[in-house]
Image (cartoon, rainbow, N blue to C red; front, side):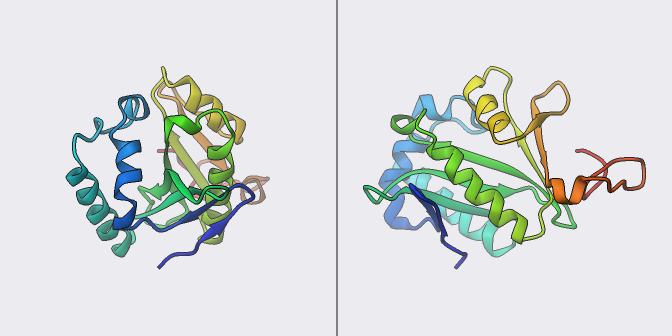
Length: 181
């Protein structure tokens, strides 16, 4: 079982089957899933399939996913994770979803800061967020966390400054991996 990451208002923990109803409130929401790579879930059964997939991907090391829990109520309000690691595991993508009732409260920012701190302990130096151009809320969120746009597809990039500062890699690129994706 992976680490529980504690913040001031939220904490991140593993997802379990007991979370299915709260996850369905997120993954079954058309508004929440409007810019996700998959359509909104139509049944609780789809949540159970997702949980099985999450467990399989975590056991193979392909992905790390957390439930975001609001401390005040002990309620699961979202998910976030790291996936699509490079072979060196120095770069990966970030994904996140938040129950619409909690949008605009800074809770996802706090959760992602916890996630990014943990990613650094895993040796990740570069984080990517693929965001659809019309998803202005996510673009604002990630830019507020220090990500910069790289290319026309709103691929936002965050490079660990302690590794990027002054360290040129072959090809003249700074950072852990050098070349972008």
